Length: 76
Image (cartoon, rainbow, N blue to C red; front, side, top):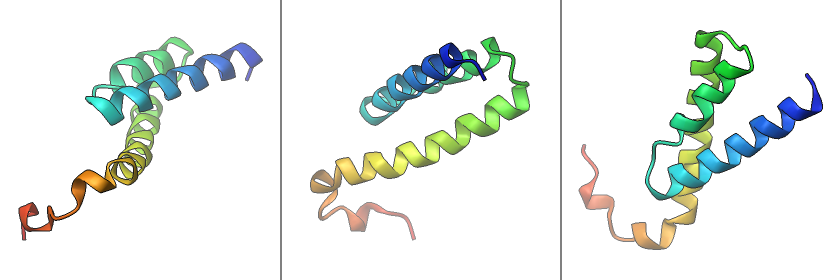
């Protein structure tokens, strides 16, 4: 993998993570970037989904102060 591809994917991932933590829709950056660099759609989709899980966990950690006392809102 060339260095410029690594830099571009890293930048796209960081931008998407920031967007996802604030409003969501970071996939609009990462998925097309992966397709642009020639990854098959299935691989791009799975990679994007794995990134969303990690981003969701870090988003929960970042917003933990706002989540205090919200357990009764959860279904189940």
